[in-house]
Image (cartoon, rainbow, N blue to C red; front, side, top):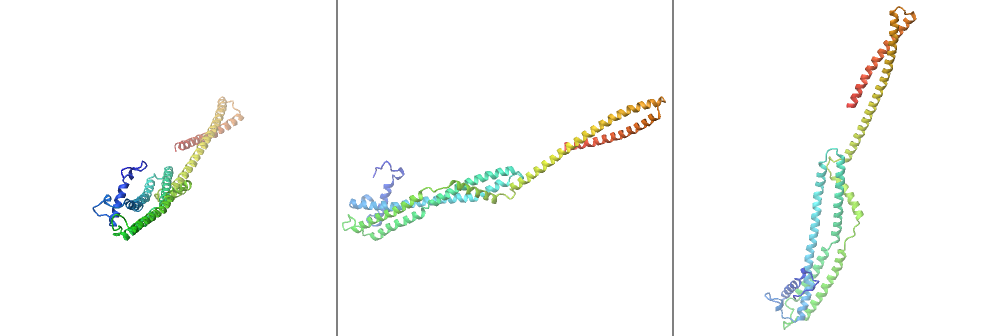
Length: 343
Protein backbone atom coordinates (compact mmCIF):
# COMPACT_ATOMS: atom_id res chain seq x y z
CA UNK A 1 0.00 0.00 0.00
CA UNK A 2 1.95 3.02 -1.25
CA UNK A 3 -0.70 5.70 -0.64
CA UNK A 4 -1.38 7.36 2.71
CA UNK A 5 -4.22 9.56 3.95
CA UNK A 6 -3.38 13.23 4.39
CA UNK A 7 -4.12 13.01 8.12
CA UNK A 8 -1.71 10.11 8.64
CA UNK A 9 1.37 11.33 10.59
CA UNK A 10 4.68 10.89 8.86
CA UNK A 11 5.94 8.68 11.70
CA UNK A 12 3.08 6.26 10.92
CA UNK A 13 3.93 5.99 7.24
CA UNK A 14 5.82 2.76 7.95
CA UNK A 15 2.89 1.26 9.80
CA UNK A 16 1.70 -0.86 6.85
CA UNK A 17 5.18 -2.26 6.32
CA UNK A 18 5.42 -3.21 10.00
CA UNK A 19 1.96 -4.75 9.90
CA UNK A 20 2.89 -6.95 6.93
CA UNK A 21 6.11 -8.02 8.66
CA UNK A 22 4.17 -9.04 11.77
CA UNK A 23 1.58 -10.85 9.63
CA UNK A 24 4.41 -12.77 7.98
CA UNK A 25 5.78 -13.71 11.42
CA UNK A 26 2.35 -14.85 12.58
CA UNK A 27 1.82 -16.90 9.40
CA UNK A 28 5.21 -18.54 9.85
CA UNK A 29 4.51 -19.37 13.52
CA UNK A 30 1.26 -21.14 12.66
CA UNK A 31 3.11 -22.89 9.84
CA UNK A 32 1.25 -21.60 6.82
CA UNK A 33 4.25 -19.67 5.45
CA UNK A 34 7.80 -20.88 4.88
CA UNK A 35 10.78 -19.18 6.47
CA UNK A 36 12.13 -18.00 3.12
CA UNK A 37 8.77 -16.74 1.80
CA UNK A 38 7.07 -13.38 2.26
CA UNK A 39 3.49 -12.14 2.41
CA UNK A 40 3.11 -12.03 -1.36
CA UNK A 41 4.05 -15.71 -1.58
CA UNK A 42 1.15 -16.69 0.66
CA UNK A 43 -1.35 -18.33 -1.73
CA UNK A 44 -4.53 -17.87 0.25
CA UNK A 45 -7.83 -16.52 -0.91
CA UNK A 46 -7.89 -12.72 -0.42
CA UNK A 47 -10.59 -12.95 2.23
CA UNK A 48 -8.43 -15.20 4.43
CA UNK A 49 -5.33 -13.07 3.96
CA UNK A 50 -7.34 -9.99 4.96
CA UNK A 51 -8.62 -11.86 8.05
CA UNK A 52 -5.07 -12.67 9.14
CA UNK A 53 -3.97 -9.09 8.48
CA UNK A 54 -6.94 -7.75 10.49
CA UNK A 55 -6.08 -10.02 13.42
CA UNK A 56 -2.48 -8.83 13.37
CA UNK A 57 -3.71 -5.24 13.19
CA UNK A 58 -6.02 -5.61 16.22
CA UNK A 59 -3.75 -7.84 18.28
CA UNK A 60 -0.03 -7.92 17.47
CA UNK A 61 0.34 -4.26 16.48
CA UNK A 62 -1.35 -3.22 19.73
CA UNK A 63 0.96 -5.47 21.73
CA UNK A 64 3.84 -3.57 20.10
CA UNK A 65 2.14 -0.25 20.89
CA UNK A 66 1.75 -1.22 24.55
CA UNK A 67 5.37 -2.33 24.72
CA UNK A 68 6.52 1.08 23.47
CA UNK A 69 4.11 2.96 25.73
CA UNK A 70 5.18 0.99 28.80
CA UNK A 71 8.80 1.91 28.05
CA UNK A 72 7.78 5.55 27.58
CA UNK A 73 5.86 5.70 30.87
CA UNK A 74 8.73 4.03 32.69
CA UNK A 75 11.02 6.68 31.20
CA UNK A 76 8.77 9.41 32.64
CA UNK A 77 8.92 7.79 36.07
CA UNK A 78 12.68 7.37 35.87
CA UNK A 79 13.06 11.06 35.05
CA UNK A 80 10.72 11.99 37.87
CA UNK A 81 12.67 9.79 40.29
CA UNK A 82 15.95 11.26 39.04
CA UNK A 83 14.71 14.83 39.54
CA UNK A 84 13.46 13.92 43.02
CA UNK A 85 16.79 12.34 43.99
CA UNK A 86 18.71 15.35 42.65
CA UNK A 87 16.53 17.71 44.69
CA UNK A 88 16.95 15.56 47.81
CA UNK A 89 20.72 15.66 47.33
CA UNK A 90 21.06 19.29 46.23
CA UNK A 91 18.68 21.16 48.55
CA UNK A 92 20.45 20.39 51.87
CA UNK A 93 23.88 21.31 50.47
CA UNK A 94 22.52 24.45 48.79
CA UNK A 95 20.84 25.63 52.01
CA UNK A 96 23.89 24.89 54.14
CA UNK A 97 26.27 26.53 51.67
CA UNK A 98 24.07 29.61 51.40
CA UNK A 99 23.72 30.12 55.14
CA UNK A 100 27.20 29.09 56.29
CA UNK A 101 29.15 32.05 54.91
CA UNK A 102 26.92 34.92 56.03
CA UNK A 103 28.91 37.54 57.94
CA UNK A 104 28.54 37.13 61.67
CA UNK A 105 25.77 39.29 63.14
CA UNK A 106 24.73 40.58 59.71
CA UNK A 107 21.06 39.95 60.42
CA UNK A 108 19.78 42.11 57.57
CA UNK A 109 21.67 40.03 54.97
CA UNK A 110 20.48 36.94 56.86
CA UNK A 111 16.86 38.04 56.51
CA UNK A 112 17.33 38.68 52.78
CA UNK A 113 18.86 35.21 52.33
CA UNK A 114 16.02 33.67 54.36
CA UNK A 115 13.42 35.35 52.14
CA UNK A 116 15.16 34.40 48.88
CA UNK A 117 15.75 30.78 49.92
CA UNK A 118 12.14 30.47 51.13
CA UNK A 119 10.78 31.80 47.82
CA UNK A 120 13.02 29.50 45.75
CA UNK A 121 12.14 26.45 47.87
CA UNK A 122 8.44 27.32 47.70
CA UNK A 123 8.68 27.43 43.89
CA UNK A 124 10.57 24.11 43.74
CA UNK A 125 8.18 22.35 46.15
CA UNK A 126 5.09 23.67 44.35
CA UNK A 127 6.42 22.48 40.96
CA UNK A 128 7.33 19.12 42.48
CA UNK A 129 3.82 18.80 43.95
CA UNK A 130 2.37 19.40 40.50
CA UNK A 131 4.73 16.86 38.94
CA UNK A 132 3.85 14.34 41.64
CA UNK A 133 0.13 14.82 41.04
CA UNK A 134 0.70 14.48 37.28
CA UNK A 135 2.85 11.36 37.55
CA UNK A 136 0.40 9.73 39.96
CA UNK A 137 -2.45 10.53 37.58
CA UNK A 138 -0.51 8.90 34.74
CA UNK A 139 -0.57 5.49 36.38
CA UNK A 140 -0.71 3.77 32.99
CA UNK A 141 1.96 1.10 33.41
CA UNK A 142 -0.18 -1.40 35.32
CA UNK A 143 -3.16 -1.08 32.95
CA UNK A 144 -0.86 -1.16 29.90
CA UNK A 145 0.83 -4.30 31.21
CA UNK A 146 -2.53 -5.93 31.86
CA UNK A 147 -3.78 -5.11 28.35
CA UNK A 148 -0.52 -6.36 26.86
CA UNK A 149 -0.80 -9.63 28.81
CA UNK A 150 -4.44 -10.10 27.77
CA UNK A 151 -3.61 -9.51 24.10
CA UNK A 152 -0.59 -11.80 24.31
CA UNK A 153 -2.75 -14.54 25.84
CA UNK A 154 -5.18 -14.27 22.91
CA UNK A 155 -2.30 -14.44 20.42
CA UNK A 156 -0.51 -17.39 22.03
CA UNK A 157 -3.73 -19.33 22.55
CA UNK A 158 -4.54 -19.11 18.86
CA UNK A 159 -0.96 -20.00 17.92
CA UNK A 160 -0.88 -23.05 20.19
CA UNK A 161 -4.31 -24.35 19.17
CA UNK A 162 -3.89 -23.95 15.39
CA UNK A 163 -0.18 -24.35 14.72
CA UNK A 164 0.16 -26.78 11.80
CA UNK A 165 -3.61 -27.25 11.44
CA UNK A 166 -4.69 -23.90 10.03
CA UNK A 167 -5.11 -24.81 6.34
CA UNK A 168 -7.61 -27.06 4.63
CA UNK A 169 -6.63 -29.91 2.30
CA UNK A 170 -6.20 -27.58 -0.69
CA UNK A 171 -3.79 -25.36 1.27
CA UNK A 172 -5.45 -22.38 -0.44
CA UNK A 173 -7.88 -21.51 2.36
CA UNK A 174 -8.08 -21.48 6.13
CA UNK A 175 -10.01 -24.08 8.11
CA UNK A 176 -13.38 -22.81 9.39
CA UNK A 177 -12.23 -23.41 12.96
CA UNK A 178 -9.17 -21.19 12.42
CA UNK A 179 -11.31 -18.50 10.79
CA UNK A 180 -13.62 -18.59 13.76
CA UNK A 181 -10.66 -18.39 16.18
CA UNK A 182 -9.28 -15.35 14.31
CA UNK A 183 -12.66 -13.59 14.34
CA UNK A 184 -13.07 -14.30 18.05
CA UNK A 185 -9.50 -13.12 18.61
CA UNK A 186 -10.28 -9.88 16.82
CA UNK A 187 -13.40 -9.31 18.91
CA UNK A 188 -11.62 -10.20 22.15
CA UNK A 189 -8.74 -7.90 21.26
CA UNK A 190 -11.17 -5.06 20.55
CA UNK A 191 -12.83 -5.62 23.94
CA UNK A 192 -9.46 -5.43 25.68
CA UNK A 193 -8.60 -2.24 23.78
CA UNK A 194 -12.01 -0.72 24.45
CA UNK A 195 -11.71 -1.19 28.19
CA UNK A 196 -8.13 0.02 28.35
CA UNK A 197 -8.83 3.01 26.10
CA UNK A 198 -11.59 4.15 28.45
CA UNK A 199 -9.27 3.91 31.47
CA UNK A 200 -6.48 5.58 29.50
CA UNK A 201 -8.41 8.71 28.64
CA UNK A 202 -9.81 8.99 32.16
CA UNK A 203 -6.28 8.98 33.54
CA UNK A 204 -4.92 11.18 30.75
CA UNK A 205 -6.97 14.17 31.92
CA UNK A 206 -4.84 16.84 33.58
CA UNK A 207 -5.00 16.61 37.37
CA UNK A 208 -6.86 19.28 39.31
CA UNK A 209 -4.41 21.54 41.10
CA UNK A 210 -5.29 24.00 43.88
CA UNK A 211 -2.65 26.69 43.35
CA UNK A 212 -3.38 28.57 46.59
CA UNK A 213 -3.14 25.55 48.88
CA UNK A 214 -0.11 24.25 46.96
CA UNK A 215 1.78 27.53 47.43
CA UNK A 216 0.71 27.82 51.09
CA UNK A 217 1.74 24.28 51.97
CA UNK A 218 4.94 24.62 49.92
CA UNK A 219 5.82 27.84 51.75
CA UNK A 220 5.29 26.15 55.13
CA UNK A 221 7.43 23.20 54.03
CA UNK A 222 10.12 25.57 52.74
CA UNK A 223 10.33 27.38 56.08
CA UNK A 224 10.54 24.09 57.98
CA UNK A 225 13.23 22.72 55.67
CA UNK A 226 15.26 25.93 55.90
CA UNK A 227 14.95 25.91 59.70
CA UNK A 228 16.20 22.31 59.92
CA UNK A 229 18.96 22.40 57.30
CA UNK A 230 20.49 25.85 57.78
CA UNK A 231 24.00 26.18 59.21
CA UNK A 232 24.27 26.06 62.99
CA UNK A 233 25.81 29.54 63.05
CA UNK A 234 22.97 31.02 60.99
CA UNK A 235 20.82 32.55 63.77
CA UNK A 236 19.15 35.55 62.21
CA UNK A 237 16.58 36.14 64.97
CA UNK A 238 19.24 36.09 67.67
CA UNK A 239 21.42 38.43 65.61
CA UNK A 240 18.49 40.77 65.11
CA UNK A 241 17.63 40.76 68.81
CA UNK A 242 21.23 41.40 69.83
CA UNK A 243 21.56 44.15 67.23
CA UNK A 244 18.37 45.86 68.40
CA UNK A 245 19.48 45.63 72.03
CA UNK A 246 22.85 47.08 71.07
CA UNK A 247 21.15 49.91 69.20
CA UNK A 248 18.96 50.63 72.21
CA UNK A 249 21.99 50.75 74.50
CA UNK A 250 23.85 53.00 72.08
CA UNK A 251 20.82 55.28 71.80
CA UNK A 252 20.49 55.45 75.60
CA UNK A 253 24.21 56.10 75.94
CA UNK A 254 24.02 58.85 73.31
CA UNK A 255 21.03 60.40 75.03
CA UNK A 256 22.83 60.26 78.37
CA UNK A 257 25.90 61.88 76.81
CA UNK A 258 23.82 64.66 75.25
CA UNK A 259 22.13 65.24 78.62
CA UNK A 260 25.52 65.47 80.34
CA UNK A 261 26.80 67.90 77.70
CA UNK A 262 23.67 70.02 78.09
CA UNK A 263 23.93 70.04 81.89
CA UNK A 264 27.65 70.85 81.75
CA UNK A 265 27.07 73.74 79.36
CA UNK A 266 24.26 74.97 81.60
CA UNK A 267 26.51 74.77 84.65
CA UNK A 268 29.29 76.63 82.79
CA UNK A 269 26.83 79.34 81.78
CA UNK A 270 25.59 79.68 85.38
CA UNK A 271 29.16 79.89 86.73
CA UNK A 272 30.05 82.52 84.14
CA UNK A 273 27.02 84.61 85.15
CA UNK A 274 28.09 84.30 88.80
CA UNK A 275 31.65 85.19 87.90
CA UNK A 276 30.51 88.25 85.93
CA UNK A 277 28.32 89.44 88.81
CA UNK A 278 31.17 89.03 91.33
CA UNK A 279 33.56 90.85 89.01
CA UNK A 280 31.16 93.76 88.79
CA UNK A 281 30.90 93.86 92.58
CA UNK A 282 34.67 93.68 92.90
CA UNK A 283 35.01 96.61 90.51
CA UNK A 284 32.52 98.71 92.48
CA UNK A 285 34.09 97.83 95.85
CA UNK A 286 37.57 98.45 94.46
CA UNK A 287 36.50 101.97 93.44
CA UNK A 288 35.07 102.64 96.91
CA UNK A 289 38.23 101.24 98.50
CA UNK A 290 40.38 103.48 96.34
CA UNK A 291 38.44 106.60 97.41
CA UNK A 292 38.73 105.69 101.11
CA UNK A 293 42.43 104.93 100.83
CA UNK A 294 43.02 108.26 99.15
CA UNK A 295 41.17 110.00 101.99
CA UNK A 296 43.24 108.05 104.51
CA UNK A 297 46.41 109.30 102.86
CA UNK A 298 45.20 112.88 103.25
CA UNK A 299 44.42 112.17 106.98
CA UNK A 300 40.78 113.03 106.49
CA UNK A 301 39.36 109.55 107.18
CA UNK A 302 36.82 109.42 110.02
CA UNK A 303 36.33 106.49 112.33
CA UNK A 304 33.20 105.50 110.50
CA UNK A 305 35.04 105.61 107.13
CA UNK A 306 37.81 103.45 108.58
CA UNK A 307 35.23 100.94 109.67
CA UNK A 308 33.69 101.08 106.22
CA UNK A 309 37.11 100.59 104.57
CA UNK A 310 37.77 97.55 106.68
CA UNK A 311 34.39 96.07 105.68
CA UNK A 312 35.06 96.75 102.01
CA UNK A 313 38.45 95.07 102.16
CA UNK A 314 36.94 91.99 103.79
CA UNK A 315 34.24 91.83 101.10
CA UNK A 316 36.86 92.19 98.37
CA UNK A 317 38.88 89.38 99.88
CA UNK A 318 35.77 87.17 100.04
CA UNK A 319 34.70 88.01 96.50
CA UNK A 320 38.23 87.39 95.21
CA UNK A 321 38.31 83.96 96.87
CA UNK A 322 34.88 83.13 95.43
CA UNK A 323 35.94 84.39 92.00
CA UNK A 324 39.02 82.17 92.07
CA UNK A 325 36.83 79.20 93.05
CA UNK A 326 34.48 79.95 90.19
CA UNK A 327 37.41 80.12 87.74
CA UNK A 328 38.62 76.73 88.93
CA UNK A 329 35.09 75.33 88.62
CA UNK A 330 34.80 76.78 85.10
CA UNK A 331 38.09 75.20 84.09
CA UNK A 332 36.93 71.80 85.40
CA UNK A 333 33.56 72.09 83.68
CA UNK A 334 35.11 73.12 80.37
CA UNK A 335 37.54 70.20 80.58
CA UNK A 336 34.60 67.84 81.24
CA UNK A 337 32.73 69.33 78.25
CA UNK A 338 35.76 68.85 76.01
CA UNK A 339 36.07 65.21 77.09
CA UNK A 340 32.35 64.55 76.53
CA UNK A 341 32.38 66.10 73.05
CA UNK A 342 35.47 64.18 71.95
CA UNK A 343 34.47 60.81 73.41
